[in-house]
Image (cartoon, rainbow, N blue to C red; front, side, top):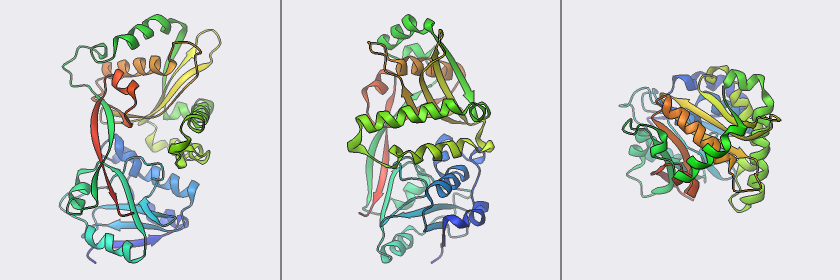
Length: 316
């Protein structure tokens, strides 16, 4: 084969890490899911025994895969998130036909979902297994609107104006997150409990408490401290955090990756109030894209989001 497939275990992380780019060196916000920080955190916490470093024909580009049960997935992607390929040379291609045959001969099924990276999609486009995947939603800031208020629903805007005076809002980046661990811990705990309560039929590994250890490990990398932030709002009278979100940002685009909020017991949504504050702040700071990730939840449309498509390559 013209490409190189190198097998390694989680114990070989130091050996293969020299091939991986830090998140600060990658192209945009979604590449966090294939960064050195993401992959090494996954190897440390989940310890998949068999992994594969895939290099392109001339060795300039690469990505990593892991064996979970009888499936081959992108390393760090049991959570059904985004995937990406590191590209140093756009002309240096992969032999996907041979790569796929290699794993098929080993009786592995391939499960690559939520693909967005254009080079990867071009390489897989000749295969019948490349299918249109789920819908994602993002809020574009084209610069044509004067403020975020032109996109968000009037109801959310009115709710923010009515109830925000009783709340304090804050944005903290990686260094401050590291030194205030309870903020991230509470966000992960609240999210975990809500997922188990409401979405048992959609279970994946991100519902497991290990996922909290995984996210905490990623945030612990100082190399991404300028690229990760938490937005939260707290009650003014007692400091109780009512809503929080974990975000990754790169090149004036951001992804709102994890969200959680307390129940209000009324018609107030602390999550939407925080979303309004966060998105308005992002617009004021000239962020071009606010990615709300996959899923067609109605609140995302009310926040001003539009649809985009992801793709899947699955041989199961």
